[in-house]
Length: 305
Image (cartoon, rainbow, N blue to C red):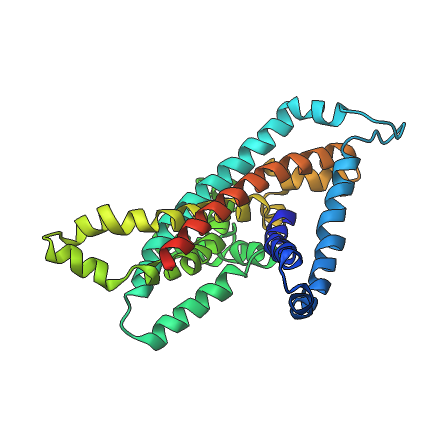
């Protein structure tokens, strides 16, 4: 998720450039000296690795000469399927996360009890950070072939979950992704609901609009940028996931992150150049997602002013 971290570095760089152009350079620089360690961190762990990644994608591992063979290899069926599967599962879980997360976020926003509302927001914050291998093992314990729910359905309802469903398949991985995608959308959309002022709804009602008409013509258009920002962020979040997919599906489902891991760290299919080429192409996809996210959040900030 290099570009996701770069997203946090980029605004700081813009601020530093504005400080240099300012008339009060010395005073401004003193205020922002604390950000230099963070900029050094971005340089050491984000920008320099990206440069080495791009360089490595054009270097032949045998001759150490320049080559484009690694990018030409992307036309193979296995790599095309990897990109298609990653885009498919990322898009699907992002859409599900946006729809369900928006509904749940609205329910939390409208909840009358402030203490319970804060507790649910805190729970969403904790849940969205519970991912990777621990999440995968949790789903195996719950929905595996000998999982708790699997055995419960068979014992009390005589219903065999397998082989119709498998946690080790595309649908099982999508379910695991939705687990951390949904609370992330909740955290994104709740501030957007807060930004919708009560005066707007009262004005619409005074003009004869009902609740459905308010949300159709006013509420949803205002939430549009936030929904788009959430969709792109959830897509990037799922596209870059590795540990959950590796633990659940490994070689059963071809994904970009898994293929990169096999190429760079694998013993049988060891070809770092191809893995780096896939990573560079993934950077463009992630970069496009983050660009859309930045544009959408800019429009959201306009509404909040």
